[in-house]
Image 1 (cartoon, one colour):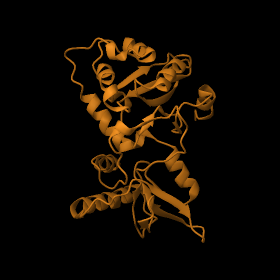
Image 2 (cartoon, helix red, strand yellow):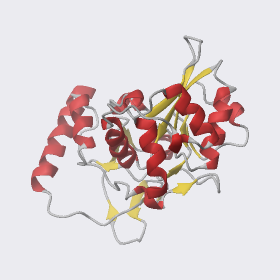
Image 3 (cartoon, helix red, strand yellow):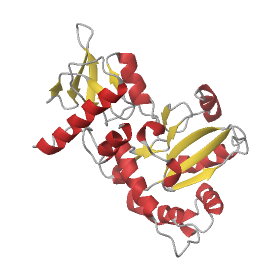
Length: 273
């Protein structure tokens, strides 16, 4: 049931703030932004004691009803959360026009949000298992650790981003402890597309990773029989997750870093479990 629900969410229903085109993306090396996630879903229910299966059924019915009865797309890019005078979480659109009443429900993490602590966890963490996403099915180049128990790190990068390339170099020095998956997409728009396509269709992915590190991915030889479906899947996933800058890094425990930490190895150690 949860897989069906997430599949519906991927289709664009029951989610606020789907990311805009990636051509205006940021390079997070310029500054580390406060964590935000525009892709939160609002779910209103009088029932809070349902078990997981019942809640999934309720959510799926709500999704289907919304799909059938949608009358307009409400122009909201960001949903702001604040604590009211009586200590309750309340929500308002970033321009102050729309306010929301009811319960915020994180469909991706399958959690109802009632406290500031739950909200901060929702916006600062990302768990791919809940999304039914296999990272290696995306446009991914990887550094696999020889340690079978190595923790997994996922980073969304652009070949034209200097901090993204620096991240690859740092990852190579940490591969005894971690396996790294670099999801490559054109965050900077048209200028990045040739290199991104080469990553999707590379003859040798290990060589392509080295080319990514030194900024030569656009010159990588390609497999002429390549069918770059995984690039299309990547663009859909990136848009759905609201990733609008690089590098966007997800630690083994799900903690998000929007930008490259000053002490990357220490940050990973602190967020390993």
